[in-house]
Length: 334
Image 1 (cartoon, rainbow, N blue to C red):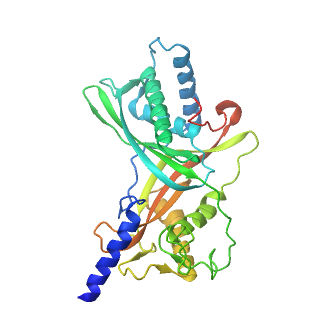
Image 2 (tube, rainbow, N blue to C red):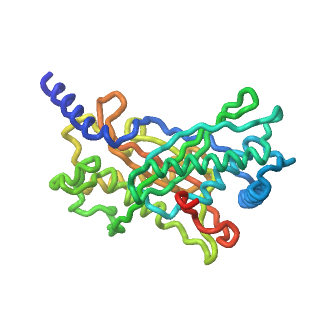
Image 3 (cartoon, rainbow, N blue to C red):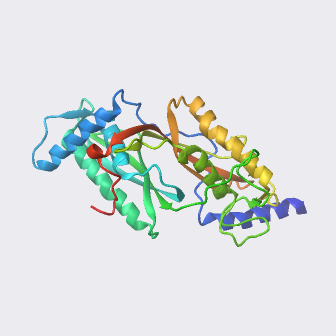
């Protein structure tokens, strides 16, 4: 009984330590419900961009053009990500910002182009406010995802999830046959607990794994040809942890929070397979690639253990002309 009481007390202490910076645990793979890929996605985005320019040039003139509701939301989400998100940037911490906007819809579930343009501009303003609310000077916009809306009384309730992140640099790892971690990489399970023998280092096993997986699965993305840049469309987000996903860190022993370098390499290899193979195969993400990876040490929902929460976003990789679509824009520069 004393042992159980000690474990419960220790878990409570660790939970208090983590509660200030961790998100809620999710114990299943949960994809967002994005629309399916358009057969000609860049052409569709090009058309929508021209429609947006026409609305901007004649703001008081109603358009005779309409879009299906799924197409309108697809256009808004993907043009926003193309314009304002940088897929080549590394983010150490991310924050989700949810906001709900309304969009007029007719009886045929169609949207006026002017209303779609207005929704796009409202999202820009909401995303800008989300960035301003973050006190960090290095905050950037990671991605926007629009969930499947509910439509009532001629309006769609459009729920948007915008993700901001703290941009930062990290040291590229030296990779050994066993993995990217060497004998000095013995880490406590969550940042900023530090190393097992040096708690003053403001990192942890979660962020160390995040950096190495970003380097292996995202940093190696081929560069776009000169005059072009990479974009990711049809964003899909998955959340999982070690409760129901074998290979992810999980323990019910509060004393078992030091992960030695061999354990770090084992976790790295298993998570790499989950992210690069298991999820794409299970959810038929053909030709999709990771856009962002965030790993955070958390306490499980029932309070009985500790695990790593993984939030991974995927997208279809394309290249677009900078002359046509420009460089990535800064939301804080109207």
